[in-house]
Image (tube, rainbow, N blue to C red; front, side, top):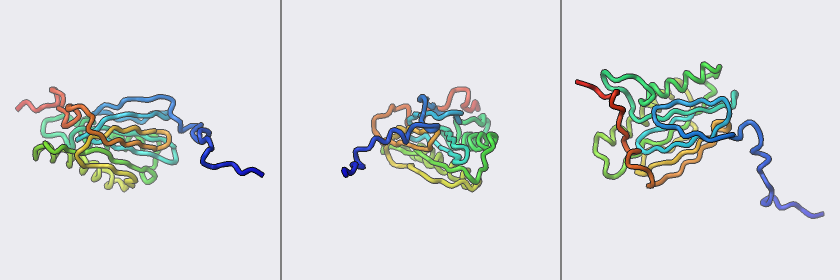
Length: 189
């Protein structure tokens, strides 16, 4: 009797099913996404942060991407900022019937390069801190985290299976470091 070599098996059959992404989507900063089907969501982060949430009961994942921790006085509270983005993501799941205690989170980004000044470093650290605080206040488990450092990241998140690929790279655009807020968001003092 000949034994089958387990290393030569084709595991593609395991990927067939509901969790397999049908298409890809590029998530820009200032957006929250909880797709109905499984998507491979791509995004580039540096000082900005991506938060993923996954509900194993619903077998559904989503994410938000933001560039600043909190709006300043007189700025609109939008998903360009961490606290509103994370709150919208959590609310999106509860609106779908998710139980917050089942949610699992991932946090990625919040880096700053060697040349960053003190204010820029504060923004990057604040981006990570604001989502940790918001997530912990809801007693959501942070199951994965890849934050800080001096390199940008390219992320692929599979919303149907909660799989994430993080590629750390120096090959990102200069504008991915500390992106500017849109003009309509700036204070007009």
